[in-house]
Image (cartoon, rainbow, N blue to C red; front, side, top):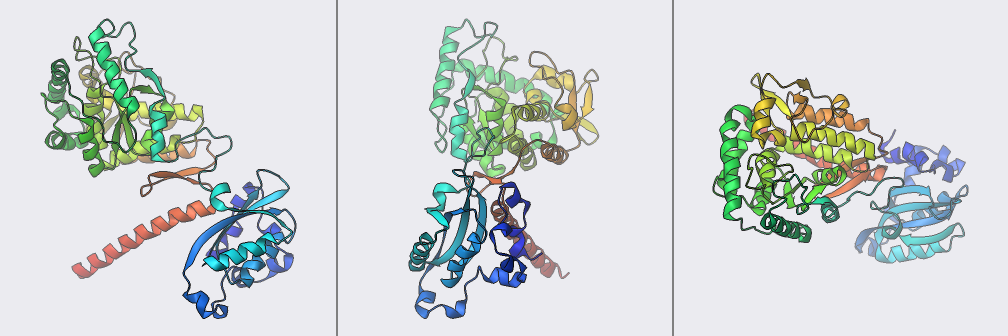
Length: 485
C-alpha cells in the first residue's frame, strides 16, 4: 500500500464512525491510486507566477457536511480547481447531529487563495458550516468515557493541590500530634506547597536547628549502610548530590538546587507538595518526569521513624536514583501507563510502583541490592530486606499488582529485577494489557502529552523518530569514516 494512501484505509476511520471511501464516488474509488492522490495535489504548472511568489502558509478548517454519497468528492474538487494542496484529512461523525459529518482538512496555500477557497466552500449546499479547526477539532478535545488527566505540564498545578491529607493534619498516634510548635511548622510547609505554581523557583526554606539535627541523625545512620546495601546507581549519584546540592549531615538540601541537578542529569524535576496525593495524581506527575516532594521533616522525638513520607525520605530515598536516566525512564513509564486508565488499573500500577520504586530490589554482581526509596530511607527495613529473613520473589507486574501493600510494618514479600531495563520492559508489556482505548506520548519539546488515537497524531511521533534515526545514521556514517570501516 502506498504511504500516501494509508490514512484512507485505517481502522481508525471505521472506529470513528465514518469511512472516507464511503464519501467518495465509485468512479473515484475505482481510479488508480495515482489519480486519487492527484486530486489532493497542486498542479504547479497552472499556478501563476504571482501566486508562486506569494508566501504560503499551512491552515486547517472543519467542514460540517451532510452525510451523503459524493459529498466529499464534490468538495475536494474545489481544492483541486483552486490548485490547493491538501496535506491531511480526517473525518468523524458530528457530535451535534449524527446525520452529519465533521471533516478536518489541513492544507497549504496563500492567504488570498485561502479566502477564495473558504468563500467557495460556503456556497456548497452539502456544507452546513465551516469553522477554524482549533475551535472544533484539536488534540485537546475531551475523550469520551475517560477520566480527566493533565495534558500539559502546567496542569499538574491542579493535581498537586488535590491533597488527600494535609501535612498539618496529624493523626493521634503521630509523634508530633501534641507538639503545637511542630504542627504550626507543618502548616508553614503546607502554605509553601499550596501557593507554588509550575515554572516558579521553589521557595528556599530556612530549616531550624532541631530540623537540621533530625536530618543529620537520619543522614549519618543511613550512609553507614549504603556501601553494602544500596545499588551502584545510587552510590554513583550520592557523591554528586553532596557536591552540587549540599547533601551533608549539617545541611538540609534545598528542593530548588535538587530540581536543577535532576533536570541536567535525567530530565526529572521536583515540585513541593503539601501531603498525600491520590495514586492517580501522583503517577500523573511521573508521566511528565515530575516528582512531588514534601519539604517538612519528621518529628525530632523519633528521628529513625516516620509514619509518612518526609523530606528525608524524598531526598535520601528517591532523588539519587531519579538522577539515573534508566531509572527515570522506568519511573516515567509507570506514570504514562496511568494516564486515562480506569481506577482499577491505576491501583494495579500504584501497587507495582510501591513494590519497585518504593521497595524494589535488584541483582548486581551476584548480590541483592536495594533501589526502593522506602528501603533506602529506613534503617530497619533496609537491613531486613537484604537479610535471610526476607521473602524475595521475581518482579512480575501481573502477580506483583495483587500483593498487599503494608505501611506500618515490614513487607511480607519483596520483588527483585535483574535491571531497571528489565523492569521497564515488563511495565511496558503490562501496560498493553490495560483497558485503555488509546496510547500516549510525552512530547519533550512542548512538555505536553499527545494522545495517539488517530493517524495524524501517530504521524507526528513518526516524524520525531525519523529525525532521531537520521541523527543516529549520520553519527554512524561519521564513525565508520573516522575508523576507516
